[in-house]
Each structure stands twice: as structure tokens, then as C-alpha cells.
Image (cartoon, rainbow, N blue to C red; front, side, top):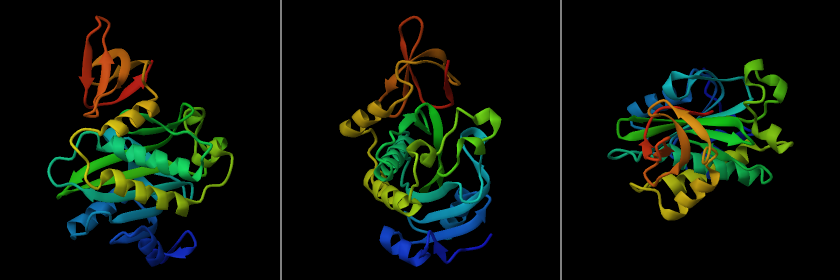
Length: 255
């Protein structure tokens, strides 16, 4: 693990000033940016501390699933978000909205959808994932975003199921501009999240919901038709008998 003095062509201290973050670390290799962010939280690091890594060797998604990033291929980033009290259940969705907005700011031709509860999708393929973990009064938000991979870079089992931002945009993406937009959106959406989604955010989330209207299988409640996401962040699942159940946790996959 080497702490970098420069990132994306500029001194790290310059990026910290541009993003107006209290603490910024950039590393060449980390096992997990979330693990390093947890260490910093234990040392008293304030909200909106940011950790970046060019390579992540033991990254993880929800339910312990791995997320490996080859050197320079993706954005591996963790941010400490304010977490006084219980964070709202829809916080991963807010982080997803922030990421989608930032990705579209640097790649306007790309439309980013959200797959409940924490996946980022482009044209049916996964481009990234989010992991939120509460720790000592803050929420550690980890983001893994495929940035530069080409179709042939993915293992055979992921071809057609995974993509990268540059592959989808058919052009280069500035990672510095991407993170600049992302930090701005995180401040806007996650500085003081409300207990329920504000109406305009709920509407935007509905427009990005890639599961709505699809037959799905959920880990928590079995099969049904996804009927959207409520203002609390729960997936609405219509059962065969016409009843609608709120799914608040677990994985989901389209049939």
C-alpha cells in the first residue's frame, strides 16, 4: 500500500481543495477502500473524508460478494457520510442517484439506471455497485464503478452482463471530472438525508428504476412483479394474488 502524492495528474492536496473535502487519501493498491475509510473513521476523520485506490484486491459488495478492480480500470472510492442516528434505508439509492448524475455529467450520451437496492446499470449491463456500512456515527459508502474496461476485459461469465462507462460512452472519460461531479452530488443529496425520499427525488428514482414492471425473484419474499420503489426505499413486489409486499432487504434478480 503506497499513499500517493498525485492523482489523475494533479497533487492530491489540489483535488482536496477542489472538492472541498476535509481529508483525501489516494492509494496505488488497497484491499478495500471501505476498510481504509473505517480505519480513518476510528481515528476521528470527519464526514466527507474520501479514500481512492487505483487497484482494489479484496473489495466487496453486498452479502460478501467480491468486487475486484484491476489497476487503473475502475473507480474505487469510499466516502464518509454523516450518520447521526439511523441512516435512512434509501441512502444507497441516494448514492446511486448521485453516481448516475455524475456519470451522465461527464458522459451525456449515457443513461444510467438503478437496480434496487444498490446496482448501477447501463443498457441492461452492470457498470457499478454501492455498499453502505454504518460505523461509529458515520456511514462508509463504497463505490465500485467500471471505468475503462472493454468487453474482452471481462471474464466470460460476465460478458454481456457487465460494461464500463467508457465502453458504453464509446469514448474517454475524465476520472477527475467524474469524481468532482460525484462529490458535488453527494453533498447535495446526502449531507442531510430526510427519513423519506423527497417527491422530486422519488420521481427521478422511478425514472431510473430498471426493474419496474419486470417479473423478479427476491431473496426476502420470493417471486412477483416489481412495481417500483416507495418513498422509504423499499421495493414494491406484487404477488400472484394481487397483494403488494414491501421488500426491505436482500437481493433481487429479474426472471
